Amino acid sequence: MELVNIAGIALLMLLVRKLIWCVRWLWCYYHGRPTPEPISFLPRRTGSVFNGHVDQTGRDQEE
Image (tube, rainbow, N blue to C red; front, side, top):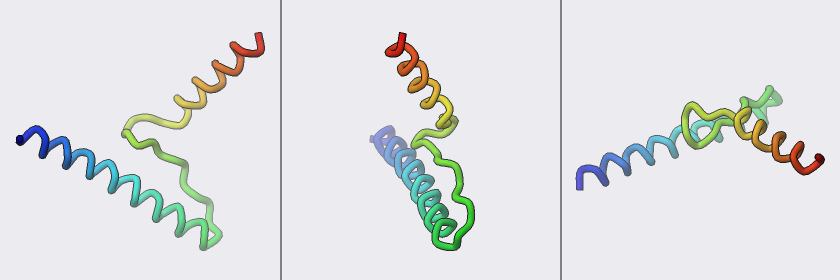
């Protein structure tokens, strides 16, 4: 049961992190400031990893 509680707390912390980013993005957007870079749900993952996969898939289809 403790493992479920720890997993739930970890999931909650990830959701809170994303919520804080969303609020910050909205604040910057409405005040005319540059918006922050998107973050992934999981830490240490960047959009460049995703973009690399998308670009590679696009290149495979063109060939």
